[in-house]
Image 1 (tube, rainbow, N blue to C red):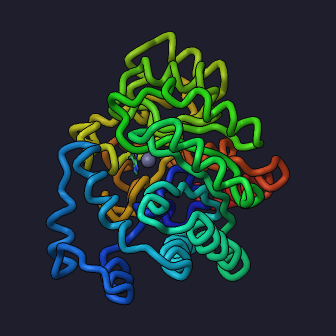
Image 2 (image 1 turned 135 degrees about the horizontal axis):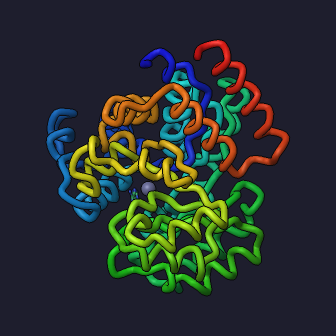
Length: 335
Ligand code: ADE
Ligand code: ZN
């Protein structure tokens, strides 16, 4: 099974680039920018990466992102992640980035987007990994602040495919961002959002009804409401599920109790993703491996998950088909 997963062609649809920041690279970049971080070793960083909830994690995650200053920093961060994609047979990835985490520290929007997008172009040419970008609004900040970010993004519109909504979910419902999502959609961005990670099914309803999202990041708590599940299926909206993130942040107590298989059995379209791999103990393949073992998933389940990852990507239909054909050939030869 491990080899089957390693070579399985797949897409990753839920990945925060700031969450892919491995301690080694963080040290290197902090040193070259002469920025102090409150850790003396990789071991100390790993010790700090023990969380009890989303907010504990976010505090450390924003601190880590604070060493990123130059275009080269964003380039190195992104290219390092894309190299890992190539090693894991991730053929396509949809990368979230949080502009406000950087612009609030005085880093220009342009620096962030240029560093990330150059790495994506190079990885496409050199590693054969395709990617697109999702600009995520931080939901603990105001809608007005998200509007400023939308404005800043407009000169770089061609480099950004979609918008997302992340950060502290509880107390920051999707409805808070109704106007900025509407304006973003008018600009041509596809609306996506985290919903139902720590927030209830009500937040998932708001995300699909008020924000009109095309894909739900996490969505675990949608299972609280049968009618919501039916509606998500009816609208053909996929859930980007992140198993190791869920256990690290105590959204799920044990992987054996993870709802992924139940979701699939109910008819929900689910994908497997790493979320913040540097913080949650594993890249996407490790997520596939861990959930396969915990829930005793079959090769055909894994094939379905990989198939969903291409099917529910934001790629054009022709490119999707190319990847789906590659997956089909792989599955037929390795059943
Ligand atoms: N930002 C980075 N990872 C996140 C997560 N799992 N939930 C909400 N915001 C995030
Ligand atoms: Zn996430």
